Length: 275
Image (cartoon, rainbow, N blue to C red; front, top):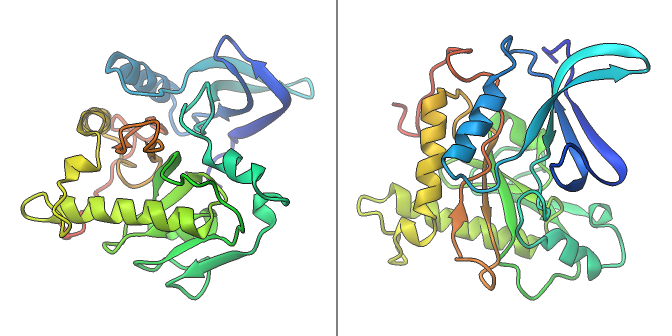
């Protein structure tokens, strides 16, 4: 609402390879309205590539015209999504669609642990009542941290941990209850291990059993170097591949949304202990 120069999501009628970034239907036009240099997102993209971060989204600068009218310089970027040329992990939503007669978004939506799907409540989750699901529901999942006051209205499928961390499940966007319960339990066990004094949870598992630590270190350093005010608050992505195809751990990438970074917006953040 604060932006006079709007960003856009684009969905093409068929897949197209734009500027050599790989075939896809969905693309993003980033306006960089709050970044007068228009360089912060691109600079961070190049830093992520140099650091070897997995699945960094490519982008190019373009001049945007609509209906013959010049709208300014935009950054045309790949959209963060589970696809071969994007986050290349198992498309659990596509596998689920193949097993059900209706579109997944048409099935009833439900919430557990809260009065409605619009509530932000610790230990709650929301999902879709989808009748059929693949045998293997261990992946892939694409998730992002979501700020608490956006969780209720913006997240279709997701959950809130026992310590109040809201998680949006971006893929599958329309997740079944079994799928949400699985990844919710996995993330909760991970969180319990992180917050313990020893690094082990009550199941005797260390946080490194759940996390690809190298990917987390890279993601953390990118956030610190860029002074990103959204770090671990919003637009902070992570993914998990199927246990049959991957390492069974959560990886932290791709990096996204850095228009307020590099001292562009001053703010103060506190952790769960109020520090």
